[in-house]
Length: 514
Image 1: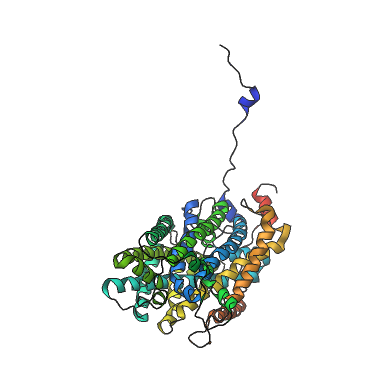
Image 2: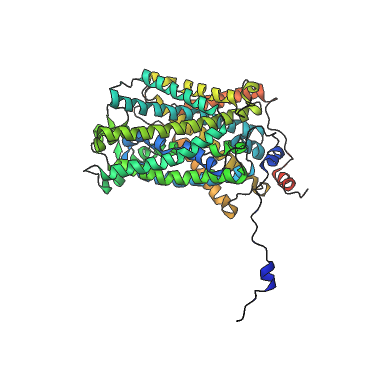
């Protein structure tokens, strides 16, 4: 019986080697920062925080009523598909820069390194406005849905005053949860991913199976509704994109948690991209499921609950089913708000570390027990509470808060991408790179952000009055004026620490070339 012998070179050939993870603590020191936060978050946890912040069960549900009158089903469905594609380009381009500069400061640090101190300064203030506006928008939306549930369960009257008290209670819960350390935040975000995916599947499945009547595909994908007062349908359709663009924000959370993530140069970049495409698919399914299940369009818009999706669930599933699914949505929104507080507080911490905020010495303090920036957490929720105060007096204030979120955070995404394109070959990518696709995807991202920034400064209702005014443009102007004034006070103290020089020199040192 013969035996075949393998060639000697085949026997000696070593197995493929997986590149060793980057030493993230060493890289952080190269970028100029001493590590003080604990790296207790893995790759899934990093993806989970951005997925939780995007939260289709928060953004899609809370702005669904806005979409019903601003373009209707056609704009909601096709707008979601189109906006998602462009946002994916923004996320891909931002992920590449995040891989090169994995710090809690994220966007403003990237802009500072690639464009200089003033670029970093204004990017930071825009990013901070967007993050704080997002906390206010998410948690106030959760308060609205909680009020709707209480209305169904006990006949509770969700007045602006009672809704605001619920909102404050939610903010307090999120502050307390975030004070217990990033490990708890990471665990909650991991649970949040499965809660969101399971929740979307449950809602869509129930709405597909239970109701005896469904809208036609023609209605869902072609019905255009204009209750804005504007005559131009293209203008109305453009304004209607706010639903999707508002929901597709907050994925910079993965970058802000870089200093608490293992192998952040890769994990944070992947977290950004994965959170967008996963939300893109889940959100489309949710919007389609809700729209097919509408029983009475006018009744849904004018619901006594104050929340149109609640009326859809009530009409399609009955009171018991509506209550159960509303609880699913509310819990998802609470997960979302908790994740946003984590991201915003890290931005406050990082910006204060570089002396950009009034009282920076206080806001950059970190607990020796939990390694959490405790004062930054409290500042984030307090400012979010103040941003929502106008909701006590104006029915359109919540829409203004969501617009503030979009108008602040979206330009901040594009600035590091633009500066990376301007840097050309001077920019040295990190371990996660787009390669030859970097420039075309980057330019698509920049043009898209420029378009939506102008779009969301435009008035959404006609005639334009105190109640229908789009206050996003005023908020943007105020934050830019305040940032400019504060620049002349803090410009001598503000500054990111000196790294080893240019991006290329940093990379060469990291690889042991110099």
